[in-house]
Length: 203
Image 1 (cartoon, rainbow, N blue to C red):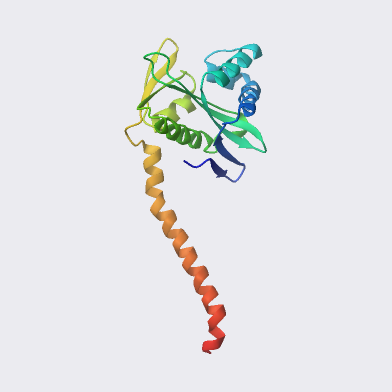
Image 2 (image 1 turned 30 degrees about the vertical axis):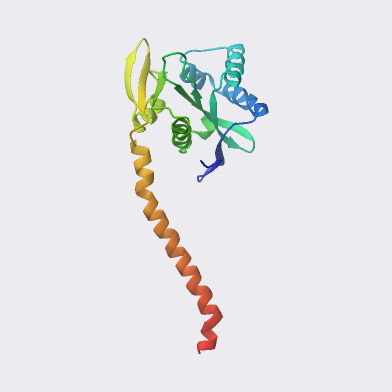
């Protein structure tokens, strides 16, 4: 599994990787504390104070939660969390992206990487819960095959990791085109080099 995935867009550049060092885990806390009130409400389905966020982040550091982070200039601007199952429950996922990094494809990259982590751990299904008003998260979850149901003020659903969701199919469909474009670029470069080396000699 790739340790780092670089993201390039017109307005932002960063990379996604899994936080594996213990000293890196406070980066999640700092990210969650920076969320604006609306984003914090969407992430936790309620308005919560800083002390709750600090306790929550500390628990993630101790209970085996996998944290995939979107990092810009050493600062976490988005995070995907894979929480281990408790008893008979399914492992649960959660996402948060700061306002400055939204609508740039960050959520899709985080989701794809987190699913790869879950598969690597041998999980067959994931549980996702999001606020009923968090339309962006609900759309992203459905993109990756989640079937959501609304109850008690929130949307809850599961993702079957044995199936290939739409987002991954799109990547697979684009792969031959990307490979072909790279091959054409290589052939063009090689031919220019060949011509510069032997063109004059042939003349």
